Image (tube, rainbow, N blue to C red; front, side, top):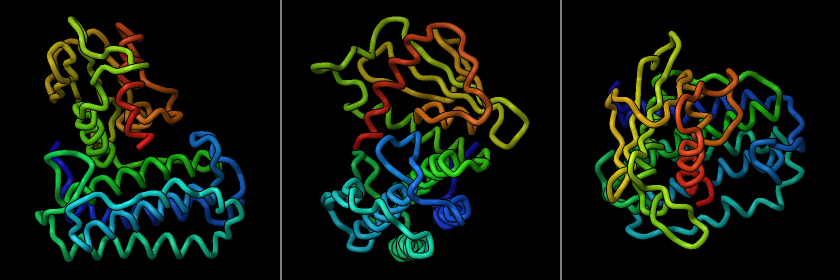
Length: 266
């Protein structure tokens, strides 16, 4: 499958935000979010909305350097939210972001946290999948069903694999178990009948840096699940269908998940 286009990703920011709002319609926003310990639903919505506004400011101003993202995580004051207030605010932030992306176009030069991906196209993709995964968090907390189009899940998995090549994900350091080593290869296979089934990824940890590809070669460990469940699995979220089927070196798979999960704490 080919990556989602810039225009499709822009549209998905609005689509995923609308679905997120639908999950919490009529919900008690004070209920805790099990997959985001310490947050309730209202705080989760504020986090997503501030993420959209953070990306919007970077794209709109064509910022060449990092912009503070303190408001994304400083959500302690949002424990008593009203869905009729935060819902429209969330939609407004998504609309502002999409407008900024449209005006900038995919090729403008802007700061991003990933070297070599300094364009609004990065932010269209990042904010789409940020919203998808937090939509899963909201669905879990609200007790509603979560589903995602297979091609969106596949694109999100492509993005996640690319994060595994960032030095923070594999560089040695205090308290960081070594990730690279002989014989260390992983494969992920999307199953089912929906769009995206049949996609596969291979991560090679045997060299100086991790390398991922769409090769369908054997690996030391193989994780197989639907595209949606693979996505939730790599993000450390509860799966819809019970988690992937794992064959081979399960400890290597968990180590890879632990190290690549650095992105969750950025």
